[in-house]
Image (cartoon, rainbow, N blue to C red; front, side, top):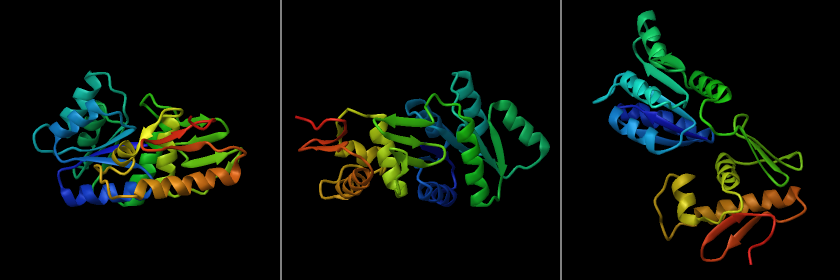
Length: 226
């Protein structure tokens, strides 16, 4: 699942991004309201973590503009303002939840999980292809009903491949979407993780599902590409 963190304090933004990525989420970061609104309109996110006090467009203004454009993405507001009036104002603006600073990371992650279970963005909680199933909320993947022991990055990789099943996905696309990296021709990070994921899928299945398209990328398909 993909989350956008909009936070002007770069240390806080880095802390949040690191904690979320360690839980297996794909994370983008914006440091002001204008950039946050632009990213939220251009990309499809499962959740927004949005600071209230931002340079340029405030968090509340960002929420109002997204809701005015009929965006249903779940939004968790973060703020040092903890009065009842501020919380009511944030929820009335269209936010789904409000968390006051300072907060513990485990509480933030629990609220993130709750909002993702509740949904809002038009993306399925469960992804399936052939005998592979992935639960995006519970962070659980199985093949033929047997649980796959995946690392957070392998889970993200499988999620992206399931979302693009039977379509050849280029290595550059995986670097950008799963690793948040620009293309590095010397990096073998994709090949290593694909190899590990293929091995784990092979251990629990009867047929090969993850194929290499030489010189192009990879494809999740019931049949090997010709």
